[in-house]
Length: 382
Image (cartoon, rainbow, N blue to C red; front, side, top):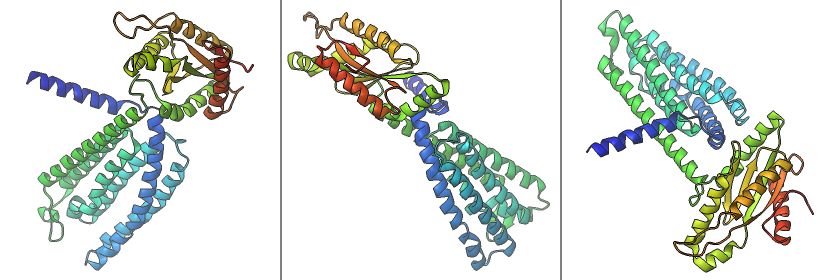
């Protein structure tokens, strides 16, 4: 029983730690796409809001209530177009999800406050308007940022809790809290709504957590634990922007193990997998802050070094010697096998302007290294 409680506590801590962590570059890129999708949904929903006042009038509702709804719908349409225009510039405004989430919650609170000004029971028991709190909370799941989801949920609970408390404090008569159309507003049913908002926040946060885990798995190589090609493609533009902003250099190294097929053929694929991990361990021992190693597939790796091509060659040459000096033992008692690699290096901005160009140039130099006898690093064309 104690072990189960400990596991549950540890799992909750990991859950909260991940939700409260700042998303990495890949998650931010996905979140920018989610913000655009949310803005498009908001624009469509805002247009549909125009139907609500009409339905209210046709259903015998109060004209004053319908006018408030109409003004709210027009305001929502105008603002939705503003948010949509900003969201189309994907990732440019990092503050945008926080501002739009605040807008979604606060605009709902303001509409309820206007309704309460007309009739306190409507402001408290209008399910149609109140449901937009839940819509706003749920839409944060598309931004892939757990902090944003928790913030939006807490903001909604806080604003609606304060609004309800103010309405109950300001009513002159209990008759103002009862209506044939909207029922009776009580502190109990308002607390129930707050609990429901908290539950929806928890569900949305869990969805964000699950999405982050799936993205992690899609961007991580299962055998070595290294980032994979997907991670590299999504992260490289951010790394390049940072390098450009700092006025530095960025070198891309392609590494390919020599005669690796021989290992699989002679000692089997399981030993081959252990050999890959052996090489990764040897490379990681020589890694420094800012270096990134990714597995592209098979026995091919990409190493990103934030330094000019000459210094990158020196670093990679050190790694090559380290790998060659640490023989791999396929199994206990077996004769150790010497592992080596060949590599080609390309550097931004001299050899290319983007990842595709740099990989092509590095691959060309890698092939020349293979042709010249393997177990060597080339940083220039022959």
